[in-house]
Image 1: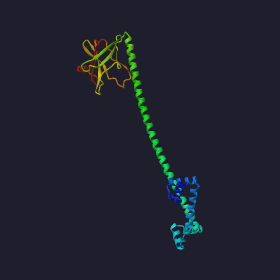
Image 2: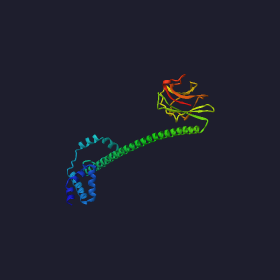
Image 3: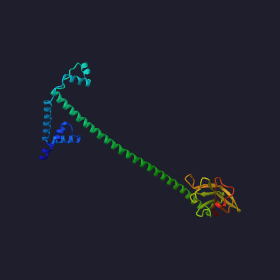
Image 4: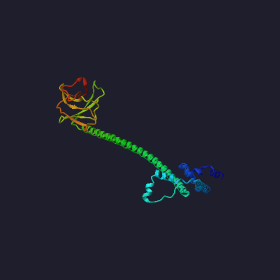
Amino acid sequence: MENLKAYIESGVLELYVLGDLSPEETLRVEEMASQYPEVGDEIAAIERAMERYAMQNALQPSPDVETRLFEKLGLNEFEDDLNVQPEPIYTEEAKIIRLDGSDGKVRVLRYALVACIALLIISTVALFITYNKLNAAHDQIASLSLDKQKFAGVVSKLEFENQGLGNMAAMADSKEWATIRMAGQAFSPASKMKVYWNKKDKSVLINYVAMDLPKTDAEHEYQLWALVNGKPVSLGVFGKIDSTHNEAVVKMQAIQEAQAFAVTLEPMGGSVNPTMDKLTVMGGV
């Protein structure tokens, strides 16, 4: 009870009646009034005291002041049109009513302003959260799309290699095909490659899966040669294995006789004679 008495005597209730408290402080006073009848009684007593003070100190303005006031407010013409005589604003009852009404409107406007600000803050926070979630979803979609592309590339490469390995196995089991293993030369010692030569129809195949050659630039490609009676014979050009190839095994030009096969690096379109200082791989039959 001592705390309640100190609260009542603190002056906060007078500020509440005058409408000079913040929304939070006003809400706190109203909560106290609902919990403790003493606080509500004190608020009513303060309001009655202010009403009595207003009535005791009310001053009646002169007719001239009233006329100028109505002119400033632009009410003379409005009253003439409606032919209505306003209630004198200097009566004590009118002063009390207008005081209470103004105070009530100020409180309502304050609550409305606080509510609008709170709603704006909540909307801004919700918009920020939604924006972050959309960005996160966009990043996840982009990541999934990239993973899908990588997976498709891996599947395509596996299918390509499986096709090449299958062809290699089939040709190895067949007695018609001879496998020529070509080893790296001085130009590229680590290179290797296989050529398949059909003994019956004399066709020549190269297998990209079993090929390990340096990658070519835009101005060069590889050329396959057959050594026939000591002379090189061109069997066509081909590029290094990359994503543009759809076939693991590629058919080159047929050759009736050959003692060896070789590959050189040549300008695009091939050469009439092999460039021997760019001899990449070679293997005898």
